[in-house]
Image (cartoon, rainbow, N blue to C red; front, side):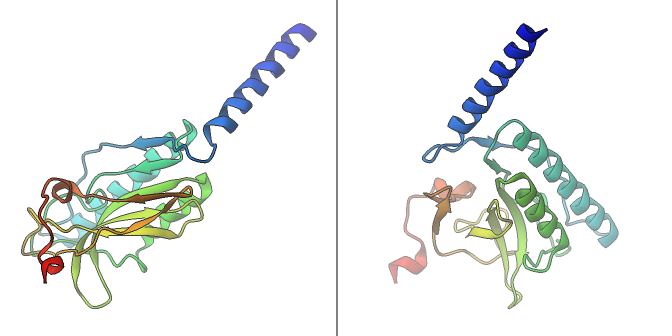
Length: 192
């Protein structure tokens, strides 16, 4: 019995040591979640709200799952909260006021992880953006990228102008959304 207990304690200590080493500075354990999202640009507002809720619930599920497996950064695709589809009926999110964004931020804080989500954002001035957020382990937004090289969102969103750099676990990182990483020309605003 003591031998089994001793063996279990030894395994626990080795597991704890491995976990401590995995969370060391300069290293980042990432989980990139590829999920099919429901779209929030249908004709019925109530259906869009249901789709938005379902997408948020899937985010929470995968945050829990990835954090349990040791991920420190959990990344979701472009427009993961809204689904990648645009129309005059798109449900736009005010990041600072949205309960679902707040719920995801709270889950990031509870799990002590970074989370990156994509949203169809409407800002305080009414401008619309294809935005990727990075939420820190304290539940605050540590970074935001607004897509620069527009594709299907052309005519529905504003064009971002900068690649921002921000800290994730003490490292400098940035975001490149879809076509932002494939077009090597300077943005029009940079050439003026």
